[in-house]
Length: 385
Image (cartoon, rainbow, N blue to C red; front, side, top):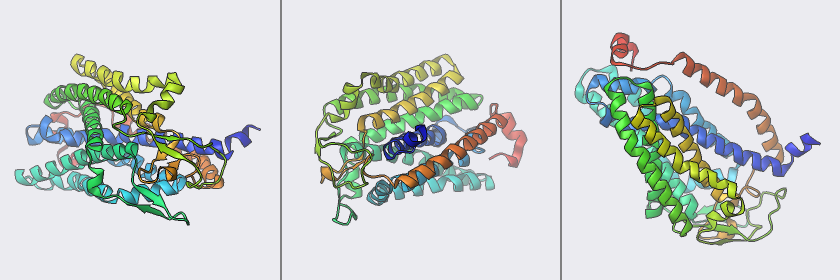
């Protein structure tokens, strides 16, 4: 009986919605501090040796952390094919900017120290800055557009048609969400540097992190006000929801309703704890930066990342991607998934392999435990980045 419930179509759909959220949080919490370090690199390090200290805090782990990005994209492709098709085609130019920026990271890590020329190294340092700051901003812009709704519709044979363009994505509300994302990532990167680096780099990271943490709390709280006022959009399903029905996004009724993103919080008051943590955790991180409590600061930063992303998921559920031009054709958890067999088989594979990934990740960080100092980088010579 329990097996039948766990593998029922409605349970599998909700389970994969939760897993998608876990993967997004995992990507932002793990690869997020890598991007944050890149975004902070020109500001927390004032000479080549200090920049090498900052880079070597993430050099051995950034590739493993980026696996979460691949897992997230793979999960969307396999579990929510319509969402994958629309987001990766509709946001194509934005995704191209992200990928172009991300490509600069491995090249920067590998080539920066190949020549001692200061100009050479400076150019790669700015490449690492772009590789950290641009994705952090664009990912937030994507969330902002998701909240507002994206102009798309389906043909009679369920072929998705995207009607927008890059400049439409870069609207004021979306750019505001991009600033929330960027400040959050900078806070997270500063928390990692304060925890992992030593000396002047760590001290400067604490100062930048304090400001970023306060800015994150302020912008996120302001975003809640804007959400309540309908400035960040809002959509509401008015027809009956059939959780075990076929995946057909044309069979429901949805209306645009400014402020509707708060409906779940009003219906389930305990959910207010999630955005509450989204404000409280950055403030706790700010206290940690000020007090020099490095471990507490990094944990608070991770909690802030999880709470801010989870707030978006709680607000939009059960919608995945609203359509601003044809609201009735919005994608929802109950009508945009893969088949029941696909979700079931993927869930079994996830239950088997996810613990292995987590165990391996924990082992890697345990092996690399300890601070990176100027002395350790100097002694490592060419073995360090």
